[in-house]
Length: 307
Ligand code: NAD
Image 1: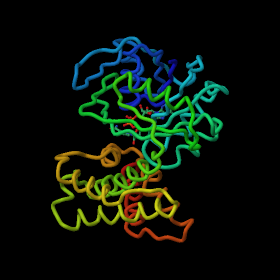
Image 2: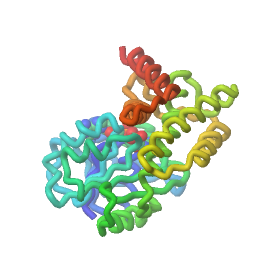
Image 3: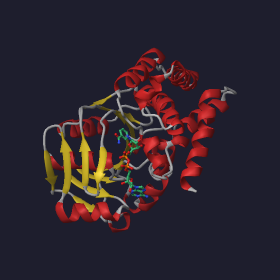
């Protein structure tokens, strides 16, 4: 399959590398010149549990250099950059191109809809992890899955085609009509752990140092999932609370991306996570007091970090 990935950081590079290794025609598109230069010089250094190797059978370029229309355009920027990234590659989004988002947060489908018709948008969620170690060098340790569906909820053959392509690359993908529940559960998980860690400077396991830390995280999960339930989405708050408790018990020393972002002086995905949950709640006159307080605090911490 001819695939372009816009936003080829940790996740985009890892997915692109694995897809290229099993014979797909992959182009990574990014604005990070150091990353592009390193891949052009040496290939993509991809470290997974199976091996440490250089993937050379892929193309890499800046948005304005990309020429060939793909069959599938995967968006893997941080959610706050989705609109700018699609604007940069809009010349690639012809009538036959499908666009897939596996990003975290809410609002990606709405942004993609400004560039592609609803029937050609795929939405999903992934539990694969990845980290950018240095330009041109990405790690992914552990296992994950991908679940995806057509964003308009219809059964479409492209979903199976993409799912089989990702699975052939080892990414364990399935078509799943309950993707929206998984997306909201991930939003609730991230709204809790990412925002509390970002404002407190705690790693995930340190939230267990006091009973209030864990209780605060649980309260956010309950609030965010109450909005999903109001939308008629069948989420599982008990499972999500257990996942949060499990992460606090097990993720020793883990800094969620939002904490990494504020420490590096970058904008975070807070608006697409806590922000989007609070905005959606307002449509139903619902209040999410803990989630909204954390939203305000992360905005403050973010502003200080970027000042
Ligand atoms: P990342 O910051 O490593 O990569 C994002 C890339 O987008 C960067 O290389 C950046 O240069 C590029 N970019 C920014 N603006 C761009 C533009 N206008 N045009 C082209 N490229 C642009 O982020 P990541 O960790 O790979 O995460 C990507 C998404 O996947 C996020 O929504 C994240 O929450 C989600 N996610 C991440 C993980 C993980 O373990 N890293 C796991 C699951 C989901």
